Amino acid sequence: MFTDFIEKLQPKSVAGRRILKISGYVALLIFILQLPNFAFTKDTSGPLPLFTIVLCAVYALFALGLNIVVGFAGLLDLGYVAFFLFGAYTAAWLMSDFGYQISERAGASRHQFSFDVHFMSAAADTLKGVHLSFWLVVIIAALVAALAGIAIGAPTLRLKSDYLALVTLGFGEILPEVFRNFGDVGGFNLTNGTKGIGPVDRVDMGLLSRLPKLPLVGKIPANIVSSDYKTKFYVIIVFCALFVYSSLKLRDGRLGRAWMAIREDELAASLMGVPLMRTKLWAYAVGAIAGGVGGAFYATIVGTINVDTFIFAFSIIILCAVILGGMGNVWGAIAGGVVITWFDQTGLVWLSTKFNSAAGTNFDFKSYQFGLFGLVLVLMMLFRPQGLIPATRSRQVKKADKQVLEHDHLGYGLEIGIDPPDHRPRGLPDEFETRRP
Image (cartoon, rainbow, N blue to C red; front, side):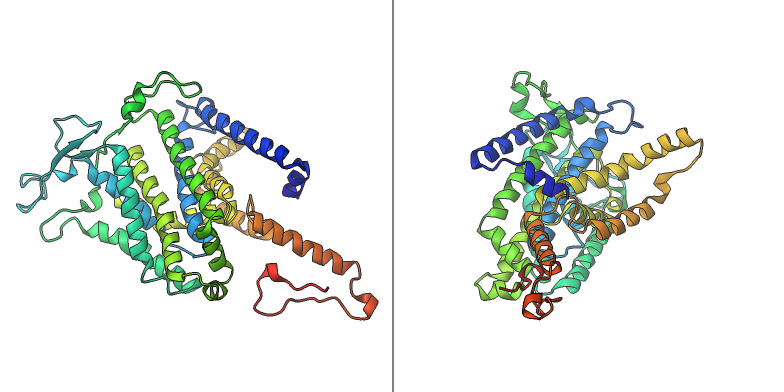
């Protein structure tokens, strides 16, 4: 209903639609740049703390990555936490003193490794270990996650539907346990087990700090301190913008059309010459890049990486964000990630405070978050199965089905003495519903 109303308001001419589109992007950019100024920087009990805004942007990036796999290619992935894990640990290995281990260190053996490497890092030169620039580490984390996506996808993508989901779920459960138990592998401490790795270095802004004071953004610092969530927000927004642009270009390109062909009908896509394995592996690799970048940035936010962070619930939350936002829609994935993260981090607590102060009760919505979340999922699947912002193709299919039903309801076919069709031929997707000539 709302999307139909929006479509009626759009200009009819191509030039008018282009002007409206550009104006919308400019307004959205101004709103995003001004968003930290409306946040509660000191009062964490408010409805919009700055830390929550940053975390919403990080989870939106994760949702954009999973939207490539699930929304575009139609591959059900329940192990997306693995790419988050690889990105975060890559940042922890390359931006901390963990790489400098000697025999005197607690729990270490004489077989330890000792690296002392500095390259354009915000860390002091006196600190031992591996300290690389954050911008270089992000590229490395993206490559590591992409290779992990290919390694995980290669032996599993021959499976389909439920079997593929179970295998990816298995990888998502195995890899955290591997990192948990790799604190001692042949005398080498590779992951520090359950103790975690930290502290992670600050984000260095490099030449960007030499720029003059920018409008709407302000002065860019040389290094981002732990409390400077405003600059962190602008950094993660840049990553989100890059991935939004890449997702839109891929969706409209040859690879994106191949993904959607596989999503609609894998057999028909293969008969039309689409290389199934290679195309699916591209989906896993591209989606994993967002997980690796988001994981590396998350490591700089929290400062310490612990294996207990990477649990199965993360994969479910990101998958629900994609589904609730609208599978296959880039903006829907962002909306789903932002809404779910806000409710999980701040919304339920803030609503509890407001409700209790008005009603004089002591009810905690946070303790019932999974029940409320399940209720929202049920309601969404009943009344809005396409998500908050449905993909264009989903809207077109729904509109076509609605027109067919209305046509049949008006008595189509009664003039020739037959009843209107009440079913489609078996084996055809929804969008290929048969109609009478």
